[in-house]
Amino acid sequence: MKYVFAATLVLAGMTHAADDAASKKVLQEIEGVYTLASAERAGSAPPGNFIEDVQKVTIKDGKLIVNFKVDDKLEEKSAAITIDATQKPIQINMVPDKDKTVPGILQLDGDTLKICWNDTPSGKRPAGFTTSKEDKNFMLVLKREKK
Image 1 (cartoon, rainbow, N blue to C red):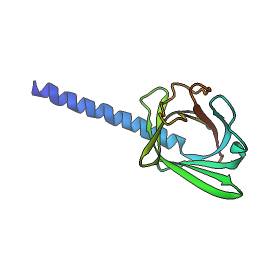
Image 2: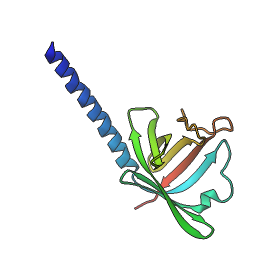
Image 3: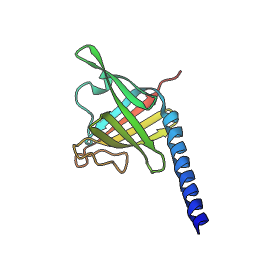
């Protein structure tokens, strides 16, 4: 009986390792420098020159970094990210500071990366890549820059 228990622990550990490997693989696949192709918040385009002001989005070393213009100055905001590739759609957690986690989803299709999250204090993870006045989701469509 103790061998069955030990085998179960080993298999459980192997499954976790495989899941972790899949998530690490996705994290590596999304690494790169992107331009913002489009954005949508609560069913509408974001206000002002949001798309033009976002200069680039970089994903590297477990961080998502956004460079953008504010009053003719360049600023940078970053968030640590983690991926759960075992979920469909793939889940992403963005941590812009230690007290906040923003749960979202992502989809990589060639050089196009979609990231969608809920833009409310409750921050419920979106089920799909849609935005509406009711759900208050925010979605970015990013295009990877050619090397």
